[in-house]
Length: 313
Ligand code: BDR
Ligand code: CA
Image (cartoon, rainbow, N blue to C red; front, side, top):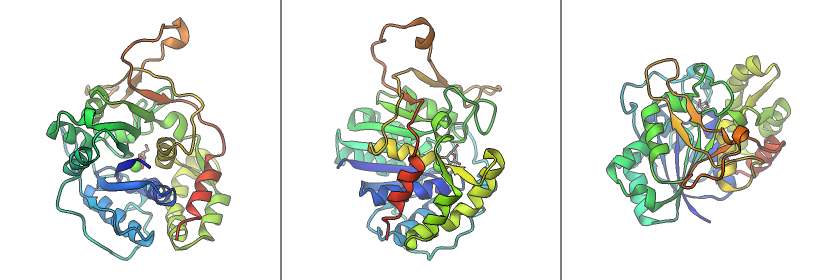
């Protein structure tokens, strides 16, 4: 399979994603953390500890950017993911991050796996933007980028128009969309439709050690989403992006579209501006389009994710 660089802000749905990548046997060459759900250092800690539970202490983890490109870290989302980012679950502390930064790791891996490295990013895009600064040739070294972030045709979840990963660093996100690599955007349009229900949580709880640890984290995450979704359940943002990246879930609609990010300081800040005028005026195919926005997925992702996670040690 393809070599992967995984960038995350671990985070409860990030933790599920790590589980999915391990369960599917993805060839993850390195993982970088970034401030988002919690500070980058804490995200790296959670990632290392989870990898140990899953029996994958061989995967190197780099601490990434603490602050966004143009400001300071806003403090995270403890109200969604708990103070420690993983719902208060205490894991044994195993291993240390590597000395290189996440951006340096990405650049190194891109050179080592020239043309083949695939990038999956499910937090703010700061590390990817820093890597683009370090190595301007990065887009030609990397096969493609899949992100969880943005919202094409639905409201945001932090502001009326902005999704968390994008508004936490809009300048970085714009740099990622402007670079000459193909980006697949898996936004709230579809991630809010991908769910774990209470029955999934209970079945996870009855699984192996890794599954049990993930189920324990879901308590806090369910508390937050149950209020929004009106029933005991949660959205599966980051795991959905991973499944689409891995090809284990085929989107039903993912058109090639121009995507830009609003980096102004007004009410539009952090909006992903996805040009869907083709829907109304039947654009002829426009040359040079590189980005896809996933807008529809088939049902049943929760079942598929559960089946994968139950295979973990
Ligand atoms: C995104 O924000 C984070 O809280 C989640 O981990 C996900 O990546 C959803 O907006
Ligand atoms: Ca995340």
